[in-house]
Figure 1 (cartoon, one colour):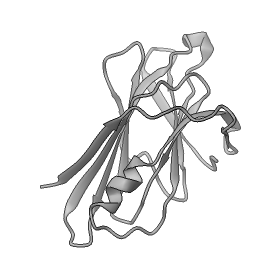
Figure 2 (figure 1 turned 90 degrees about the vertical axis):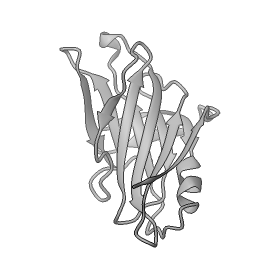
Figure 3 (figure 1 turned 135 degrees about the vertical axis):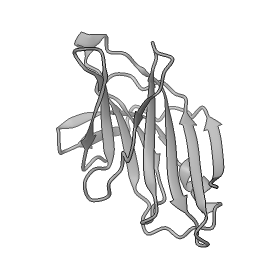
Length: 161
């Protein structure tokens, strides 16, 4: 049985001077907020970490399709502690992310971890899930959008900072 460590906080927006860029797909915009609560929660589960990366959630919902804001993002990090017990570290980021902007989530990471991201649009009641959203060495974020047919879409982005 997994233990759950959770927080649900409204995070204060970051200064608009905190621009981000992702070189892989030439994304850039403002970082609407930065959150380090997952790091704090991870530190409470007595688990060793091998890195402390930042993970990015980018709103890539084109203006032509309504330019909808992301209402909230739920991050679930599944890991084991030093005793081999499974834990779920959960955070709900409840600040809107407008078109072309991003949220930066600071993580603790080890080889037992996996990250699930759930996004809810401002105009929708349902979360859209991305399993295994983070792959060290492959991507450090996801760009989310609504496809031409109205379905949820996403793509991994890399080299964001």
